[in-house]
Image (cartoon, rainbow, N blue to C red; front, top):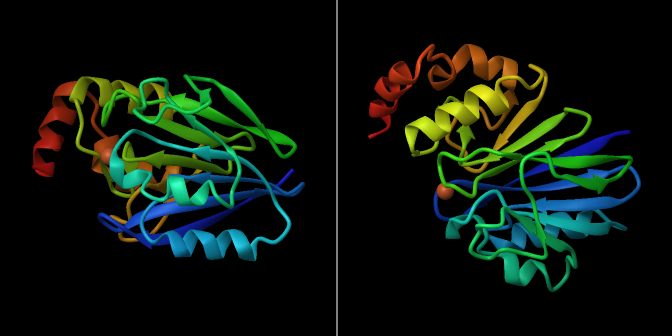
Length: 205
Ligand SMILES: [Fe+2]
């Protein structure tokens, strides 16, 4: 089993990333199609013979789905999102939902905090995690502190260190890195208490 990830610099509202995920059997998924729709169109065309399976939305903010309408004209796939997502699609996912993909699955992880409808998507071989605006390289998204702290501590930190973090914006010193590296470098992941996390969050303002 192998998955490949194409990280697409789509610009958009603020250095956004979209993603194209490909499986060995041709299954394909897009994450947060937004920004320069032409970049996404090219990536899909370059992928050749593929089987569009899903368009995965990480949360309801407009800057993460600007290309959704256009993409669906050539990437005919089911839209997956949290039930509270304003564009709630045909597939609604909650914590632990498994979407069959390639020889494995894409697993939804509910991570409220940035928004109540925030979902991270994990590839079942633990190779990649798509975090939207929950976790950035070196930072986190604006959030309700208690919910975000619980999501980070209980849902993301237990994942294997080797998982590559692919976030929704290019805010870091590098475009992606592993969760193990994030644990070392990201101060928001190194708060022993909620109060310490709240102190750290003041630096976001
Ligand atoms: Fe957002």
